[in-house]
Image (cartoon, rainbow, N blue to C red; front, side):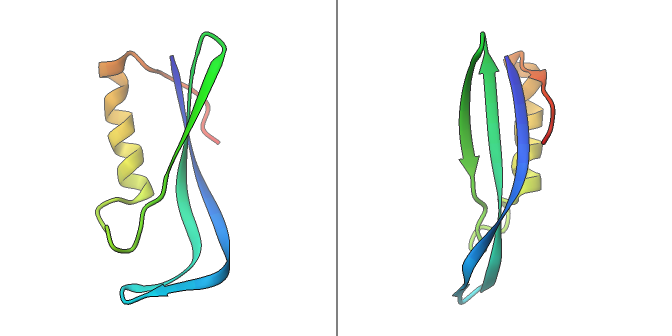
Length: 77
């Protein structure tokens, strides 16, 4: 099984403002998991309201799970 993680920047058409701040670009994490020629995709979007969930912290959590799950390293995009 191979895991590939990609940080992507999605420019917003309009600024999004809430009490905690304004966002013009949403940085998300795209995940690819491949085994036996079959690929699945997942996506995670951190938000201003949940400061502990950043792209970096989510990548770190997934990286720490690799050895326990027998996941090999794939290419990063």
